[in-house]
Length: 287
Ligand SMILES: CC(C)(COP(=O)(O)OP(=O)(O)OC[C@H]1O[C@@H](n2cnc3c(N)ncnc32)[C@H](O)[C@@H]1OP(=O)(O)O)[C@@H](O)C(=O)NCCC(=O)NCCSC(=O)C[C@H](O)C(=O)O
Ligand SMILES: [Mg+2]
View 1 (cartoon, rainbow, N blue to C red):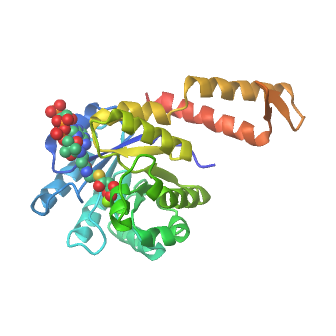
View 2 (view 1 turned 30 degrees about the vertical axis):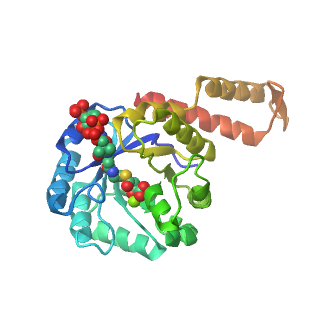
View 3 (view 1 turned 90 degrees about the vertical axis):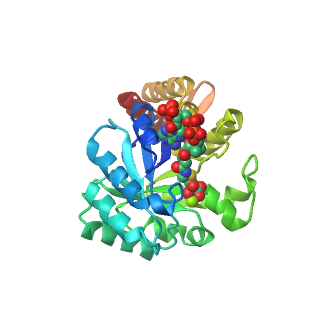
C-alpha cells in the first residue's frame, strides 16, 4: 500500500485572485489548486501564471500541498504553463481534460524536459467521456501520475446531464475512475459542489464521496473546508473500532478469525483497521 498523504480538502482558487492567494495561507486545507484554467479570463492568464509560480516559490503555505492547474493540452497557453509550473516545482501540476495514456506520457515528458523536480507529480483531471473509456490505461501510464481529480462540472456538461442530489447521472464515471485509481494505487479526489451557501447539500455530497472511497474532495470556497476535513477523516468511533479490532486480533493470535463487538474479524478487516489508524495518525501529524 502506498503511503497516505492527507488530501481531504483540496481548494481551487483563481491564480489571478491575490486576495484568495493570501487568504489560503490561513485556511486549514490539505492542498490548494492555483488555477490558470477556467477561473481565469484570457487577459489575466499571464499574470495568473506568474502569481501562481511566485506563490509556490514563496514557501508561505506551510505544509499545504501546492499545485498549479494549467490550461488544457492544445490551448494557446498550455506549453508556457507547463514550462513555468515545472520550473516552479509545486507538489503537483493539475492538467484538465486528460483523455489518453499517450497524453499522460507526453505531459510527463514535457514536465521532465522543462526541469520539473522529482517531487512534482502529475494530477490528471478526469472530466470527459473519452477519459472514462480509457481510464485504466490512463491510470497506469506513468509512475509520475499521482492523483485523479474528477471534473464533475465538465462531466455534467459533456453528458448533457444535470446536477441532481445523489448524483445518479455521474455514478458510472465516478465509479470507473475510482476503480482505475485503486487498481493503479493512485489517489482520487471527488469533484466540486457549486452551491457554496448550501452546506446541507454539500455535507451530503461529502459523505457520499467518502462512502464511495474518494480520498477527499475538491472545493471552491473557504466555507466548505471544515465540513470536508471532518467528513474525510476517520471519526472517533472509527478510530476506537480500529483499535478494538487490532486488540482482538492480537488476543486471538494465530487463529484465522475472531470476533469484535459481535462482528467477524478476518485478516482483511485488520488491514482496513491499520489503514484507518495510519490515516488518523497522518491527519494528526498534519494538524
Ligand atoms: C465562488 C467565488 C467566486 C465566490 O467568491 P466571493 O463572492 O468573493 O466569496 P466570499 O465573499 O464569500 O469570500 C469570502 C472570503 O473568502 C475568500 N475566498 C473566496 N473563495 C476563495 C477561494 N476559492 N480560495 C481562497 N479564498 C477564497 C474571499 O477572497 C474572501 O476573503 P476575505 O475578503 O479576505 O475575507 C469564489 O469562492 C471563487 O472564485 N472560488 C473558486 C473558483 C474556481 O477556482 N473555479 C475553478 C475550479 S472549479 C472547476 O471547474 C472544477 C472542474 O474543472 C470541473 O469541471 O468540475
Ligand atoms: Mg473542468
